[in-house]
Each structure stands twice: as C-alpha cells, then as structure tokens.
Image (cartoon, rainbow, N blue to C red; front, side):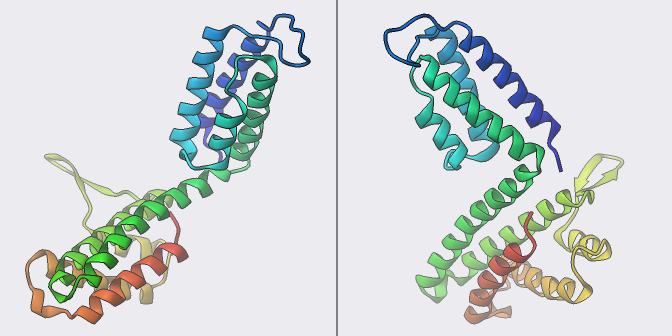
Length: 225
C-alpha cells in the first residue's frame, strides 16, 4: 500500500535538493563544487528528520543519507538525491508498511525483554511481568486492527471510547485476520493480564506468565502490524 503523504514529502525534498544542486559553483576538485551552505544545511536537516520519523534512525536509508550527504558540495548533494530517489521507489512499492511493522515489533519486543527481566528476578515479580506482557498484547491487537481497517473506538454520547482488548480480539477473528481457535487462545492470555491488573495474583502461576511472554512474542511475529 502506497503512503501518499510520505511520497509527497519525499518528492518535495527531491525538488528542494535539485534547487540546492543548482547553486553549485566552480571548484578545482572534481564533483566537489560548493553549494549554498545555508540552503544545503536546511535541506539536509529536513531530509534526516523525515527519514528518521518515517523509517527510524537505525534504518540503512537514514544512516546512508547521514554519512553520504554531510558536506555542502555537489558530490554530497548528488549522493543524497540518489538515496532519496531509492527511498521514493521503496515507498511507492509498499516497503514502508514492512518497515512500520518492524518498528512496531522492535518496540514491543523491548517491553517483552523487560518482562523477561522481571521474571529472572524471581517469583515476586511475575505479576509485573504479566501486566507488561498483557499490555504489549493489547497494544498489538490495536495496531493489528488499525492495519486491517477495523475501528478501535466505539461512538458513545460522550464521544469516542477505545474498544476493550476482548472486543478487538473478537473483531479481528470475525474479519478473518486469524481464526476462532486463535481468538480463544488470546482470550486466555488476556485473562492472565486481567487477573494481574486486578490483583488476583493466585489465579495464575509463574510458569503461565513465562509462557505468556513467549506466546505474545511469537504471536506478534506471526501477525505483524
């Protein structure tokens, strides 16, 4: 799916880069003709900001632009424009959706790592780990619903109200994102989270929480959002 807003922004940056290129003056060094420094700095900053916001600071495109386009000369401007055109092609071909899925997965995995840490600290921390893993699950269900154009809010007389995780789970199953068996499994996971959140700590075991963390991680991998 093409993200037209991102595509338009990249087109704007390419146009601005072409304008920067036109400011190049003569130099004794091949392809090192200087360009207008202020205009170059502004353009470079906008490019890096956009790439970081869209793809993340650790994405190869962002890193390549930062390293290959840092001096105010024609060579670096041409390098930057080449990277932007490659990025535009990736966005046009739908790569952006894949990148966003990866970012979501990485963020959620950071929280699951935290839950793993709590579990390693001993049985007294299983409840915190259950709450964290359950929160990651609910967050992923919401992202998954958004990906499949399923409403994540209900309209009420007092305004929009976020759907509960159980409702999102039922909606996702009804729309065929996953089957009814998976829905029932998720209902069980949400049950552990609810018991932890309501201080029903004797209703689940240490082993069940450890299993929950692994199961949620695997679920995110199988159903990326």
